[in-house]
Image (cartoon, rainbow, N blue to C red; front, side, top):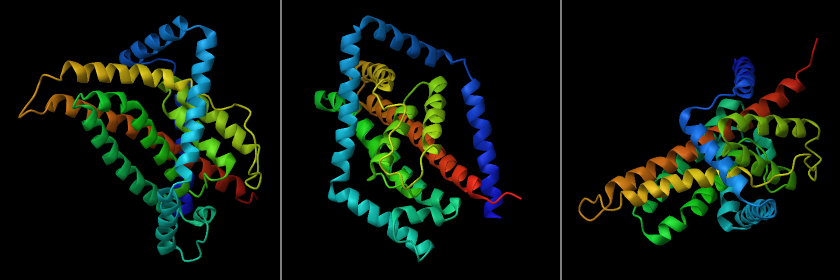
Length: 283
């Protein structure tokens, strides 16, 4: 029964990817952001643009490495393993999680997603207070929350992001997740093509398409719009609290995080299902 459901989900995800890749039209809001992003890119000299991309790429890599050296990250890996061992006693390593049925892996991942949505909403609400520190720290904090949770989702599906190959994979998943809707699944397909060229044992595999920070431009435009909205609502206070600004900040960040993590969840679902389908014996 589980195998049939998993195969049907794999087919559904295949259909979704094909539709998304063929989708060329943006809605009005996305088109406005896309045009603004393109306008910004045209105004920035190429040398500065390259420096900006390199800066963000380096920042993401170092942040990811920093996360993985923390005690909290090691405790999270252990926590995921402990929860998985309740479902199946012979789980010893992160890669062993791939022995579990997809519905159980989804359960583990959804627990991490729920926690991240709460944290992101609270962080957005703090930004909505319009204090200078909260506003300036909003984008770094939001990206940090999402990067951390993308790693945790990868762990839940049995992919150890401590391995260089999987570390870069999770970064590229995040990159795809923050791009406009017409570009998200181009990154998805390129990444899946790279993955299929390497065995799991090839832990130092290199990607043909390197991670870069281009998607951040689009995110920066969105964040600027959000911060301008919050700033314009700073005087709409109730009992000394800018309630509208707090609400906008909380909902905006929650929505951003939800989109990123749903994309991430679908990617790792599709990846593990593709591996299982390819491993099935053919008559």
